Length: 133
Image (cartoon, rainbow, N blue to C red; front, side):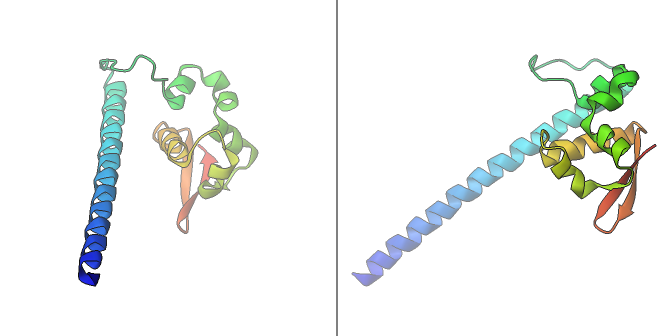
């Protein structure tokens, strides 16, 4: 009887971990798909080719919105506002200073600002110091 119970426990545990791995794989694939869509959108923006809009409710990226009106860019962009107030702020500290954005959104916005030439990054250990360009 002991061996039977042990076998059932092992089978149940194996099934549980299998389901967790499948769920994790789905999340990773969905994230990769979102990254591909974002990269395709950025390439289309750079080349000037209009991308087909699959999601009409998706808001434009903050960097694209700010690029349309440079006079209000610093005021509207919380990251640029923070860098203006604290030149040389460490990127890992920016995540806590900009609570309306999650870490991934903040990283993406910083990457867009660097690519647009608005800010520059200097390596500081495992993080970066951020300055206006």
